[in-house]
Length: 91
Image (tube, rainbow, N blue to C red; front, side, top):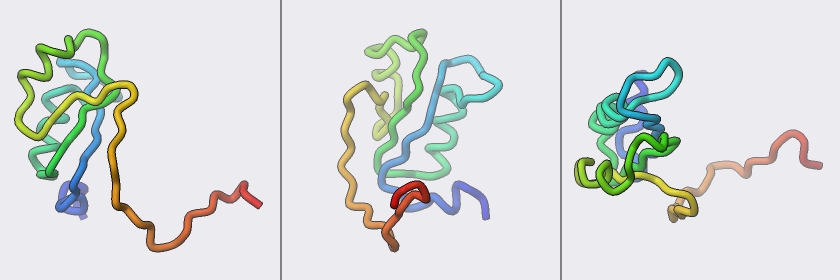
């Protein structure tokens, strides 16, 4: 199953967008926006953003429903796991 199909219906999508230029191991802004377009979430946040992306100018250029994440951002979630998650290292 393609990832974008599996994520369809996602309310909030968080994806990295390191910089404008392509990078070997991270999404860049254009690739992140393409992924967001495929998933079609209600809200998307770009994270792991390099200091090269000036916050105000970059935010103004993003499409509606896409924002830059920032330190201290809190996102409310109604997610309820189907089973209680217990890491193996917990007693």
